[in-house]
Amino acid sequence: MTKKQVEESLQYLKKRGFESPEIGIVLGTGLGQLVEEIENPIEAHYNHIPYFPLATVEFHSGKLIYGTIEGKKVVVMQGRFHLYEGYDFLDITYPIRVMHGLGIQKLFVSNAAGAINLDFKKGDIMLIEDHINLQGGSPLAFKNVVEFGDRFVDMSEPYDPNMRKKIEDIAERENISLQKGVYVSVVGPQLETKAEYRMLKILGADAVGMSTVPEVIVANHLRLPIVAVSVLTDECDPDNLQPINIQEIIEIAGKTEPKMIQLFKELIKEI
Ligand code: HPA
Image (cartoon, rainbow, N blue to C red; front, side, top):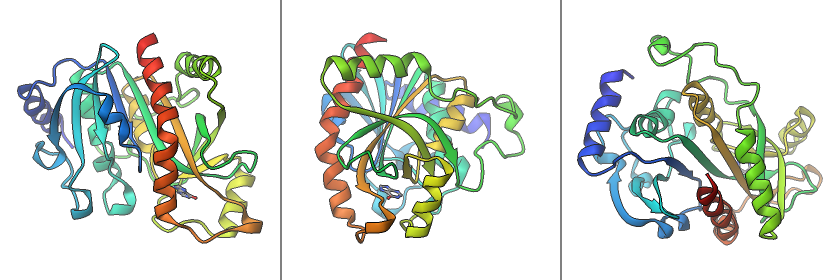
């Protein structure tokens, strides 16, 4: 990755009308309905944006969408890149650098995740307060990282306390039950064994998923304030573990998404 590549991606998007978005939003697996809330949308397919990672066949629908929500200019990633698809850390975080280059000042991230904390239930939303990186690498471990920012990025408060507080207030006001906790990222794509779920709990995780952490590290590199939520799609109870059902995960994500949309829309209004 070079600055020149990012610049070319930006030129392409600006030419198509992606002018000065204020907020970037990353939509997780099964979370696509927010796109319907975007007014005056302009789309750019990942495959057409110079230097974007080359999309796999199953990922042909990935796109960046620019428009307005609640009167604010946003750029939304419909579909993200994952390590488990064979991309590397630089690939999967490249879109964050591009959205930052477009001018976003805040980043909202969402994902589907499994509930490690068994007080949490599928269909709950969890506000991410902190994370554990178990993906075995970093999107900042590359040779010319200092051209883009510090090498030793502070991670004492990776999720913006102001926006977290606002989300909590909104949830209370709108009667949306909101869990809070620690998200652990794994590579996948295989789901966890019972022994692994036990381990993740001991480590201090409340939810587990296969994304988000690299994007959050890069956003911190860029000093971009982040708010992130997990839509909990399955309960990871090692003593009563059910075989995974991806269809059900996607279905529960879809059913829960309206609550997430409400939280995000209210937050957009308030910031
Ligand atoms: N583990 C990892 N990733 C996931 C899970 C899970 O149980 N559920 C949804 N994404």
